[in-house]
Image (cartoon, rainbow, N blue to C red):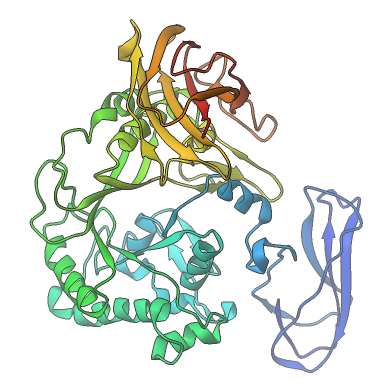
Length: 498
């Protein structure tokens, strides 16, 4: 915290149970001569547990005390970079290959005055002015800023995807004649991330503790801005400048090129989908017939949302199954679909402005929604090879499937993922030909995500009510019979002898 006071202070910081019955931790300090703002750090060592404790700052002195930048943080965070270990552990379990930041509408703002500005959120935290996130209606102190996002991507061994504002908000814009300073600002942001420690902005990064450049390979120009007629004019100003300065960077357009070819250059185009579960399931073949030349597809935001009661809710089983079916379609079209990410990733249960989300947390606990667990079925897909399979069933209309071969440190697997999006159990035959090795049934497994009610979800009290269950697969073979329970995602992992 920062303190300023003309008084002599006898000051105590404590963690106290909300009912006042227990002081969990406290630390005291005596201070004088604080006519200027002074940074004070105190370590609070807990002597007990109280999940509803609060931070109390008290003094025995009567007088005037100014307080600012009060922050209570755990001392043990992921790699010492401020992120809660248990939350990052859940993220690491998904094996993310990229991190898109700082998100979607947060980049633009309802008005440009509240847009994300990277230069105001680097350097010492207490010098960051903060801003109002007017799309989601909360104030942010921007302690999580551009540098911290780059650092998090590096800590996750994930590629950073930098989403930038190109002078467009939901309700206003910068005139194209005045766009040059903003273009220069974005070039400065890339120098901050990629420049040498001797460059102007690279030296700022180095002074913050990271002399080596960050591996920024992708820049998305705007977010959902193609709806504006002036988007292309703005886009081209940034595209040309970035490609000239950094020809290695891949540029992502907001305009969808699946039906009509883009009228501007791009390496990828951004695709968002928020629909009901039936729509998402039925559109699993969406990219089967799109052009195979031109920009690749980046499905940067996908999720089932509640368009009718019970459809998506806070994140339930049926939503995750529709999303899984959609992902099997993306997997089979991975020659054109380069990346995909569920959105949003995290939500604080005390301030839920959007539902559903993948990971829900509060000050001391967390859980994954069924959509989170669904994604674990696809975490080995990056770098895997699509393998052709045949599925024979009289209920094919309610099924979606894909198969890949992948390898862990010792064993190769054929993974067959099948979604049963219907209310009845399904008998089927799975046939796989052309395998490079025989199937080892002793090492093969089957994993199922299901529940007794398709609208079931998870909660703090029952964090794994809907979660994958793994068992042995003694009948594993190149051709085998299987039974899919109603409303389920099943993964058959057939171990291959090599």
